[in-house]
Image (cartoon, rainbow, N blue to C red; front, side):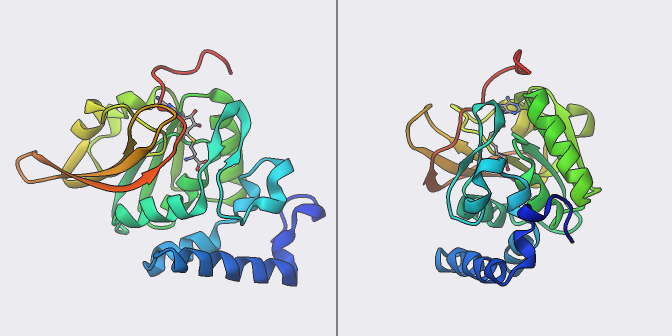
Length: 227
Ligand code: SAH
């Protein structure tokens, strides 16, 4: 269905079908194999989440600029981190770094519900609006410092951080339930970071695996003072 001006309705054209098929193929070629993840990537219209000037690149495998100097992550990285999180339909998921809301929308297709925290009010409000228009009722967007997590709603089955942390935030690992998993890019600012996957064992110990190298915008402390 077309929800915005006709120029944006690239889903309604034969060219759009080809583009979507190529998008799926590119993800498979890079090793994404989980069917539920591939389906979610097919169902969520990325063109609604990018800036108006980037719509023609919505299905290219690249990060794109959004408001407040932030980025919507590269589709492969979104699919990869989602796949590595091993989400089940009963899971409650916490995301840190709502940005455009795209990753939250993908998570919402796989989990019971998603709480997503963003430090910029402007981004959070725009994401909320998009999510409402497109209709993903199991997502809640909060404005605040995601480094503190959402202690009032913890424990979570899964946590995904979509900004690069210097160290894994302790408050977040504390909010993982037993058997819970978290994926988080860890590493210095403006250098190569690694997606780290933490799993909470019975008893509370965390096992840690380093996955792929990535580049994310930094996880910054505090709610943004700018809007
Ligand atoms: N997941 C987003 C992309 C995120 S870019 C998407 O799908 O579009 C990283 C986001 O993390 C940015 O919007 C940035 O403002 C936010 N961020 C950085 N530090 C944060 C913090 N401490 N708490 C909440 N959000 C944070």
